[in-house]
Image (cartoon, rainbow, N blue to C red; front, side, top):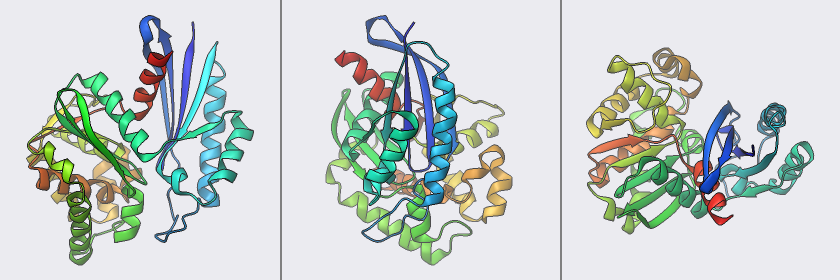
Length: 307
């Protein structure tokens, strides 16, 4: 029995997924772990961005924990990927050397377009949808894909995410009207630069990323359901905007109280959701669909197909 472990060094969290390899290029996930490591925290808003020592320490500790887990599986192949925070870090080489010393694994730093493509593969394989817009809201970037008839017609990665946008517009606590206006205008301009994105008008929006899972959890509670697996759950754009608007009026402590188990994201939640609200408005999105499958599953599926 063979397994593949994927270490995902994201800008907000460090994740581990372990999957059993099945015949015919298929796989079944058997374990998933996540630690909030905030790799993108305090990297700065200038041209030179640097991974902070505290973030590196948190990430290496998570990787040490994960190493103990995946080494308990027989015949396991380990792959590691890194996304936005590592992609732009001035100390990327030094950080990757530390990871290699700890795990023995070479980290593949995904380009933004590669990340968006693997998101598309993972989400489409899991949801079986043919026409949609995809948004993966990460800590240091967000990926956008327009899918028509099952094909990704265009894609991009925007180099701002929930952590970096929160810091840029001071959204950790109560977001002032002035900063909200600047934030919305900034995202509006970013979207308008992607003319191809408007081919996705009126299509459902598939959401990946931790901030979006928080919304899914809140929506299911409002429906009287407590779920841990939000994959495939749908909600109207109106319901999303109602939740978002409610949170705009809350300070960080009030958000923590509202979010419960998701309180660790309370400081960056508006940084992650404001771009989604702007997408809904500009593309006239009618419905949102949540996906638990994204870059890791897309990478795994693509790797097994190539083999």
